Amino acid sequence: MGSASSSVPGPSSCSSLVSSGCSSSGSPGPAPGHASVPPGVRLDDAEVEGVLFVEKAILACPLPAKAWIELGRWNPVSLLLLAPAWSYHVSGPADHWWFVTRSANHMYYYIAQFCCDGGRNHVSGCAFLGMWAAITSGLQYPDARWWYAREWTNCASPRSKTELDQLVVSSPVVAAPYSWIDNNCQHFAVELYEGDEKLAA
Image 1 (cartoon, helix red, strand yellow):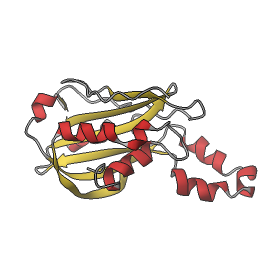
Image 2 (cartoon, rainbow, N blue to C red; image 1 turned 180 degrees about the vertical axis):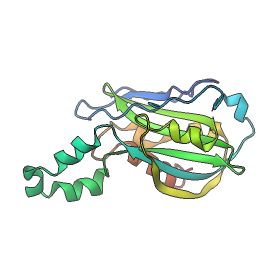
Image 3 (cartoon, rainbow, N blue to C red; image 1 turned 60 degrees about the horizontal axis):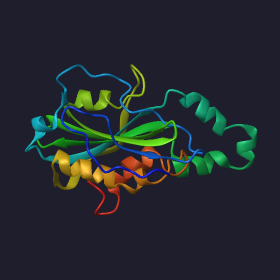
């Protein structure tokens, strides 16, 4: 595995915060940000300077190949091994999850996403203006439906974008090789939402 960088992108950037190698056995996950947002809703660091994010949630949408993934879980061989039961418990459904925080006035949103592409881990953290942009930024294809995987709740403490960026790159999920079974976007989002006190937002 390659070493993970702890650098955070500069203003107006929403590219990967971290790229590190993942095992060749890890299936590539979705690249974050498949849906596009119009200019003006993705915010530079300077535009959210002084903004504190105080509430958190996890949003979800189906992966583009969800039907095929789910079908694979329910084939005769996997049924003999009871794979559907343990695979849902360990890795969750075939959905993309992304972590979201918002300011007290519900105007500013910060989202963080994790995936593996071409054998490398990628994580991104971006600030947006409005809930619609926070939703759209995580959708895996146009017109995908979305829902709350975890409802809004208070953050452990109010945090700036810079502090959230540091939490994101400190996640143990990002440092470990991607695995569709036990180290994927769902594990990443849950770690930020309800993980260890030092690592949760």
